[in-house]
Image 1 (cartoon, helix red, strand yellow):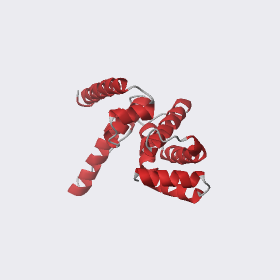
Image 2: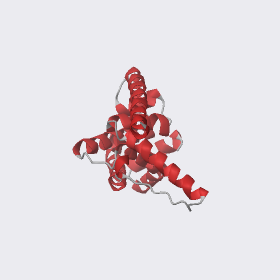
Image 3: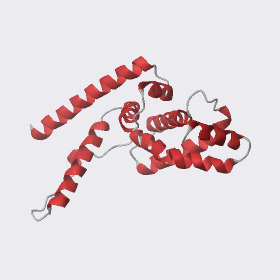
Image 4: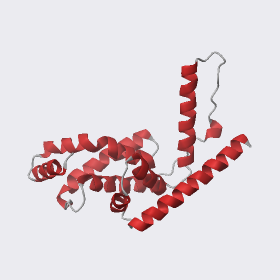
Length: 187
């Protein structure tokens, strides 16, 4: 959504044309849900939080000063709400050790590739679940949402240099975790 369009919609909603807020929801829902899912792994909880982000944004629109883009403001709300939920509700996650993937000698190549993709996805998610939710969201904002260091700083309230340092440390730790998991699996 272009900044001019955002500004028009925001001003119109503030004046009472609340139906226009649906355009904001439609434009940003997938991105907001993705950010929330980077912190909250339960799909139902993530969807609920994403909806709550838009409810909060709607009722807080009068406080939006336009100092940052609308998307940055929405990301910040999503970031804060996700971390709050994660702190309150620590979930237990299924580990790879509990997942048994069986191969049938008669599986065709296509199905075998799908299982390999699922296994890689599970391994990656398992590694990401090893770090704190606040760290997962930084990684997600940088790699999945292609946010700049400056934008991540605005969203999280963390200084730009600190964001760089945190991203570097998180990446290094993820590599260490992945290497340890590989050692355990393949001895």
